[in-house]
Image 1 (tube, rainbow, N blue to C red):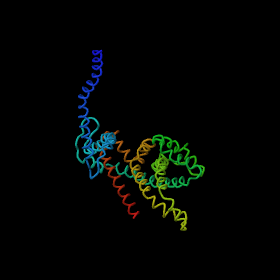
Image 2 (image 1 turned 180 degrees about the vertical axis):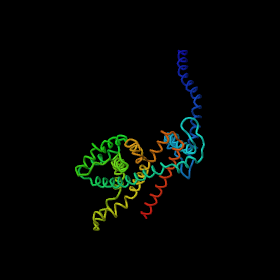
Image 3 (image 1 turned 90 degrees about the vertical axis):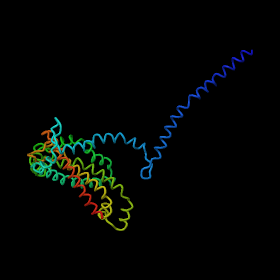
Image 4 (image 1 turned 30 degrees about the vertical axis):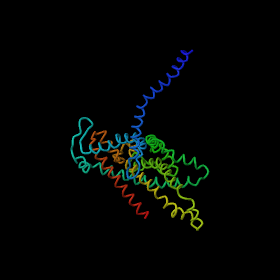
Length: 335
């Protein structure tokens, strides 16, 4: 009996000894957790201008920052470098300094494409802005069917520019296009929208207005819905008519949205390419050639990538200057 009891006692002591041995092997994770905990504490103590640095936010932004740096910032820097070189894709770029910029001043095509781009922008931006405002005011009335109207007005913007351009090539056909067939019912003779130098920019501009007006409507509709209804009601109670409420209450409060629409319109106007490429290929006789089209032609047809990069830098400076002037004008009107 005594021997059996000793055996049972040995069995009971074995797990305890094992647990003690396991307990002696545990300090390593504790040390590791202490090191990581100390690192976390040090990171949390870091301050930037009196505020704690949110490392988790930077971690979430890191993938986008990586792609943005590699495919955007690096491309901009490389393009700026190319503008001072002569390169035809094959071989190494040859440094030529300001020769590409001097060539742009002597190139007879540069004033033509810049003038065509300005004409196109001056046609499209005002018309699409006013039309977008009218559409926004209409759908903001919440009349029966206003939801379907919003969808229909914005739907063209969802379609790719290539598809839109192909559709409008058929619509603007001189002989069989639906636009000319509709105009002929009013006795208007057929207009060669895309085949004559006089009308080609109007044809391309008409396509762009139809394509982007719904986008402008969405921005301006958001601005209209952000105006407090109490202001309109107070003006109406004071005896203001509907036009007076619109011009003296709605329009001043809508100026930030209008500024955004005009700024985006100017940028898109100077960067127009898809419509020209699909509808006219820059013709006839260069009448619809724009800056981006000419950059594409020089870079990927003539293989003058250095010269194309220089034209791109000049286009960026043009857009930057026009945007600054537009913002300054709207700011002065606001004050």
